[in-house]
Length: 336
Image (tube, one colour):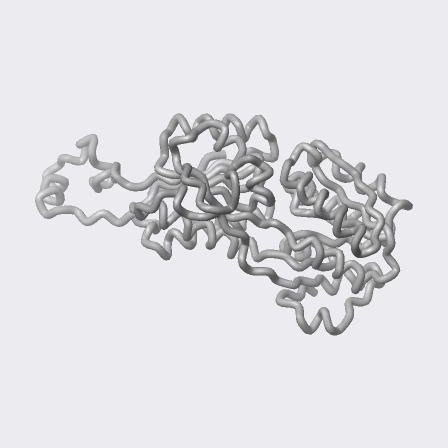
């Protein structure tokens, strides 16, 4: 799916306006309304591994921030976006297409899309977003300014806070199940962190892996009878099929906790996570700086800088789970 949007208001010179009124509308430099076609505007191509609320919020945040910086819907920007529909092969094809188009900059949302783009170009500026471990994914050598063409924003989850929430809300939970795509490097990195933190906090971890969104319901069902709660990290494959996990949890009295706020709105009980719209705005700021002349390699990669506590009271009530008043009172977002 491709959406191309030309954003810029073009002021027509009087002579050009006169020519248009005299019947020069067939000029190849004019559009069907006789307005000049913008040919010298920045071209930003955006690739996204899959559509789900968190990643969509990143994309919207990028676009809104660019509008604030003057790249708005009046011809000052060519904006192109494609989704890989959760398929790595599609992400590779989109990356190749974008590189062939030679845009001024590519925004890559989520690890598989970012890896595909970075693997296809070392000349076009790339700004990644919603990438858990950009170093482990070999996008950049470190979070410091790389000197190359790549920078961006990492959404490394506060795993310790997530497990602490599970302990506070479900104090009887001893075994936590985690569902993730072992083919997503960001998910592998998160689960490694989760293993370490779970041991420190006294939890036993039960893993269930998937390779596609179609596998998610089966993975969730495999945890029934083995775990006291289910944790969904910021894994794009699993998050795109979150409702199937929620259904299994509800049918089996298993509370589901998440790694992102949008998943809480969709039915998970709680999280301490990033506002992904703000992650997008943070990313958009980097994009605007590069379009303004800064060199990507001079801009250090950043960690997402806002963390919100979110709870879903209706989801908790449906499972007979009581969220402590202290958590409800301090929550940034409460869904009922």
